[in-house]
Image 1 (cartoon, rainbow, N blue to C red):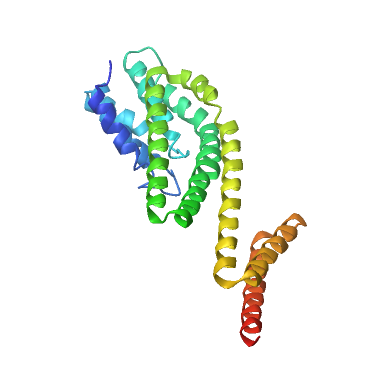
Image 2 (cartoon, rainbow, N blue to C red; image 1 turned 90 degrees about the horizontal axis):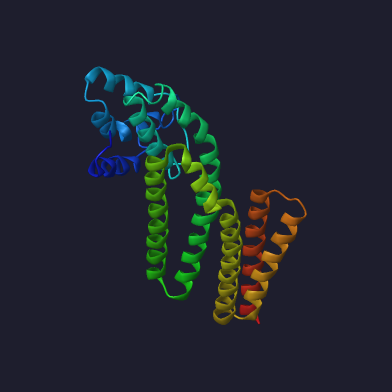
Amino acid sequence: MTVPRLTLLKVFWRSLFLQAAWNRRGMQNLGFAYAIAPALAVIYPEPERRREAVGRHLGFFNCHPYTAAAILGGAIHHEERVASGAEPVDAPGLYKSTLQGPLAAIGDGFFWTALRPFFGALAALGALAVGWPAVVAALLLYNVIHLVLRFGLFRAGYLKGDGIVADIARLSLPMLAQRLRLGGAFLCGLTAALLLWRGALQDGFLSGAVALSAAAFGYLALVGGARLLPAAYAIIVAGIGAALFAARWHGSS
């Protein structure tokens, strides 16, 4: 049995709300069951078998919401095989439990710690350079990339089932994530330099020197093993104090 394309699109649309019913007991289980329900209604026309299938997907499930699309598509693939008698009824659950951990790690490492910070840094730099349209453009581009990847994973999972593992490996997302992190750090450096340059133009060389000194002190503190938040608070307080002193000294002179 093959699930119609329109039904698959409906399942993918529902997957965008995977975390809407997040709970401590099953985490994303309700969202997963809600998303896959239209496909199960096609695969299992008999109410009793459909209830059993939905029940299989109410067990614990937790994954990155983007890469979970691959598991959702693969679960439909395995449910079709269960309905045809080619696999036992525990095959979809085994598929989910096997992939949810690795795909959660891949998704967190690529999307949360690489792609999203990169576009955040790009938006910050663009806002300073050309204004708010750059923020909108960065947001739109990020969502286009993530939705294309998300739909591609869903489609590949449905078509290939367990074969999705090889497809994800070929994407080399961890390596790409490392490059995005380096790019994001570079963009942050450009943003800081632009801020210093503008501050020096508007408030004089002394203000720029104070800001640069505060940044250098913070970097040295972090390299020396200082904790991030206490060091950040200390840098902010010291920088504000130094800036006020410099402004007062500049005014009195």
